[in-house]
Length: 171
Length: 412
Image 1: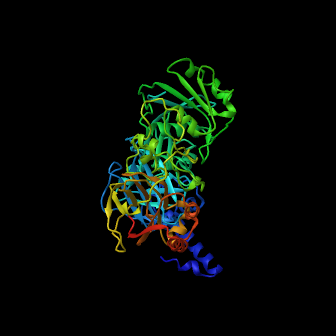
Image 2: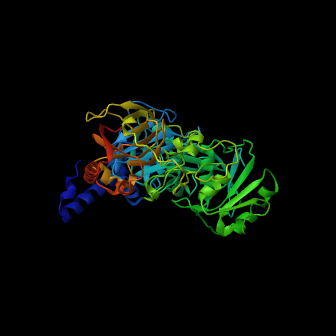
Image 3: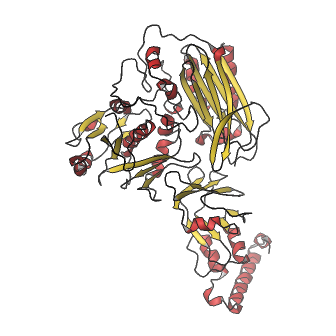
């Protein structure tokens, strides 16, 4: 699907949105996992409004497409795994994410996200791995284009970042 | 007090001890943590601004731009921690900070603000802070209570009181040497006057290392090197260089100009893991290598007499103007004694994906040059083209100016 429907006039856009809603409902009715799986519109609403993501999300291509559309920066899969101790360094168009071990506390690391555009911002880091619910990490406001968080090396976010298959989204 | 000291930040919730200070990766931001945990205290942002140039004074006076400080009790807000933290940094630099559970000869109890001129300012509720420190004062090693002169009568009983107008007074009392040269933040184009070379020489390199303050490290990674006189009670002597103040004149102290003996080099540093590695001398030129995380410019005085220098490094072009808030620039000003070297270091912006030109500028003089001082006092406000014009103007005035334009591709 392309985004060309966004270029329609008001009536056409409303028609498209109605169709998408109907498809979403129909999908929920026909999907045997529907009772425990939030709808696409519910996920999109949470992403768009900044609310917490609903529980029961199952990663799939649709979720990745939603997140890619909502995110200001999307990090692709990595070629190889890394550990926080080794230092994680992931690049994407618009930002760089690094995990830097703390010299002051060996069991801790800094998660540093630097934006190419110093005025860019993101409130959440969402990590999507295969077979597990997305992990959402709230971010403080960037300072001079950089977000920095200090975490223990056992923190789930670092585990997720070390997963080469994880897709990362700054939303 | 001449041995290791513990530093305590006086707060209205009780004293908070500085447990440890650690230099962190320069690409990060400074942080204040609670007792070794990953809990960053709310003052971390203000502390980073207190450290980082151009607003901060710690980077300027220690040469290191990012620190982690661990304290044993929360410090929630305000700026009264600044005096204690600054003194702790200076003690750390002198290898005299009692960290963790190391024994301490004494305790420095401090509360006060510190401005860019290192003036100590008054703070609120000092009496309450003193009252909440009663247990600390009742036991343990002797306590030196330091605060602004406005609080001379508020300091806790049982402690040796030290009411000061500036940080330098506290440093002198602790046997530490005040920073000599500071960067553009508190640039004061005042005539420093002639320098007491005899005293500087006896200082055993104190001047040499201090010259590089303002974020300009003599050797990268040397921040641990003691800059103070070790373990001696050392009141400030007449003629001693003091921060931002004219030194007392002394006879026979006029430097002899020997510019030809001053070399000017460019150095590059490449990433080693997540850190920026050691600096190596490079061939200056337009064919820039990739993956350079820092560029330094070094002036070395191989002559036999001192030379006054203005040493400046800056990223050039639109990036510099665009990123002026980040200050991809550094300035060192002072007198370079025989055998001494001074460096300024700049980090090319890692978000730039193309070649970056970095300019090094060295001005040498045999004495005070008010026009140079005035120009360099505002050099960070000049565009690259305006710096070109400045260099031309200095040449026209027969000022000894050297310039290196070095192209690199920043490390990501």
